[in-house]
Image 1 (tube, rainbow, N blue to C red):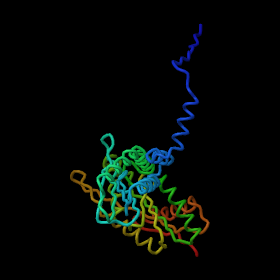
Image 2: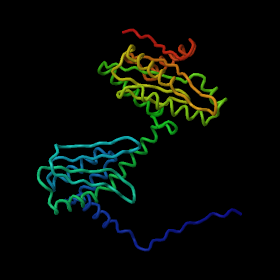
Image 3: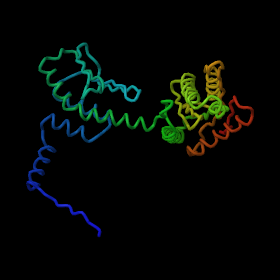
Image 4: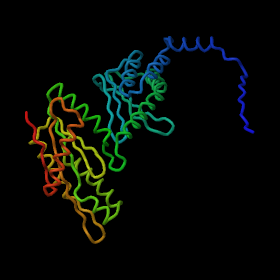
Length: 308
């Protein structure tokens, strides 16, 4: 015999919908500055937008000349600043439940009074929870776009950036070049020395590439032992120079494997973005150039020649 569980709904007190509606209306329309601040902050998870709201609400109550915020989120610096500074400042380290959520600094030409400092602290206390949520949202977003092994952006991040670069190239005629790099004979490294050494080599390769490229360039782990480098405002000749620097930097890697020294090489294929070309087509051409580098002896750079 099949028994069907029954659920009995019990309510100690009837829900007062009218009271809830009235409370919501009061919360939505309250002129109280702290209520207005938390209401506005609750509408977004953008940390930059929240800091703009916070600056506006503080400025409505306490005049200041500049507000700045600094924090390191997921190993990346986040900086927000508005206004021009003055000689007097008050600085607050934002801590909540044992975690640090950045430093907020206010500057102005006139010294802050004790009453003003107390009011600023009250405003920050009301804002700290939404700011915490925005910081955590950035960290989660960043984790989804970061390769866990090498700590550089992953293929998902590359796809997003290629889409943006393609749009900018088509709209404004800006030059972008993509380099795909692949470690030579990486499977042999794993077979002979194990995956621990292989993973260490991938980390060192990511560091070597980052050190070899320019500040404006960005590197991604494309998959396995393959990396991608996106170069803005760069043509084929300059991109070849970057690729050759990368090859030299990776060639300088040395790993002590207990009596033997491991070194590797890397092959590179590059392609400049063409007008109206999709990211997948762009990647395919760079991959074709990389295939030719592999087929023609490895440890070299090949270009998918473009016209125009």
